[in-house]
Image (tube, rainbow, N blue to C red; front, side, top):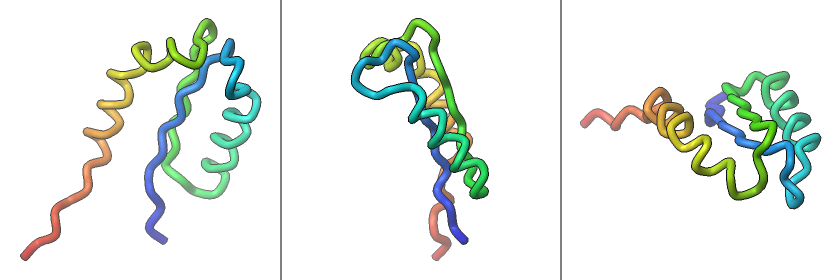
Length: 71
């Protein structure tokens, strides 16, 4: 199948999205054969993980570029 690569960024101190659920989803994706990267920030909350992870996210995008359809 054609599985889309996925990156998950989580903060341990996130009050809106519990980190335990993020860990479960990441493990399940990997178990089902997805190319999934999981980044966890011990002091991160819902907002602070964005600037902390931006370089990793763009590196992920660069490593997983879709190839343009050949005409």
